[in-house]
Length: 454
Image 1: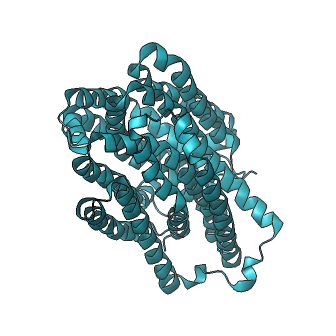
Image 2: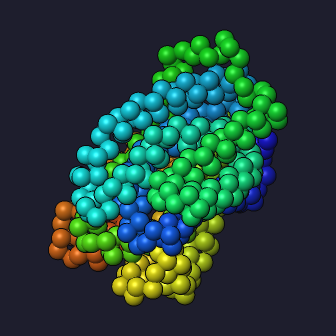
Image 3: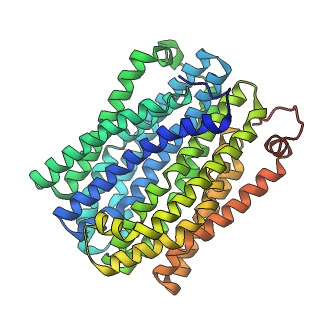
């Protein structure tokens, strides 16, 4: 258990974010290992099948992840205030709402899955493999929700290390099951999906056991499950804000994927490989965003809003240090990494994916500011501007899908994210600048009013 309400913000945020970064890396390894093993055993078409469905799973499971992350902000706020009863009631509400929403999403996604794949213009030659993989992932999406929920509760009370340890363990389980199901039992992409689901279940079970043994005060009592409508409203307000922010972005990505799917299997494989690398290089930004949201929420709950601004500045500085490293990776090793991930020596795939990386990574400096500001505003209870920026991202990707991609081909896709990041960051900076109290805290001006707003 670690409180984020004292000490130097730079060190605190970095120490809190590093386990999240490493844990997210191992979470990405689920998909990476699936891609490498399936590519070597089944072929490039299988890699394209996994890539063509990634945005569907990211949309639905990302929504659930955003929802539970938003719930955790409320838990963190009550923890910072030292109110364990309200903290446990927030955990109880998280459990109730998490199960309810995941059940609805499971049913709806399974009913309309084939239609989703058709709308995305999934090529006929990989349609069956795509459906085989994604249907398993979505059928058991509750396992992903349970892990994110339990990890979110632990992070809300300052423990970002334990979820990392359990993810490392589950990653090794995933590797073993991939080798068994895909290589030994020849189950193809469906085997890779089962390996991922079982590994996620293992990480949740480990988290649950740890909470019961180490943090029993987090476990709600029976009467605390009788949450009030006001508590439900508070949880849903924050949870849906995060979930919409996540899912709106992925809706735009879905539209973008529909355009990419028209360029053929080789381009899909190239884009899949590039996005796998990008996902890893972008992990620190998401971790810093999550850390800032928790940091801001705990400090607001503890009545220390004066610490918020220095925390935001520290997180942006950390993101810029990482951006320089990411650019170096993209310009020196992208070709080698692409050939490894896609399990191919196809020069078109390698060159196309490498070009994507070299166009995108210089704009990571903008991305760092974007993610930190958006998450920090969420942690402070400001929901409108972050969600609005996500809507801009969705609209930007829609423009690419229906205008730039047909006119410029895959190059239009390559330049889409940097352009959208710039637009969103401008909106967030403007929203930040108009919040005079927040500006005062960030730049060290005297101010005594509370930052907490509804």
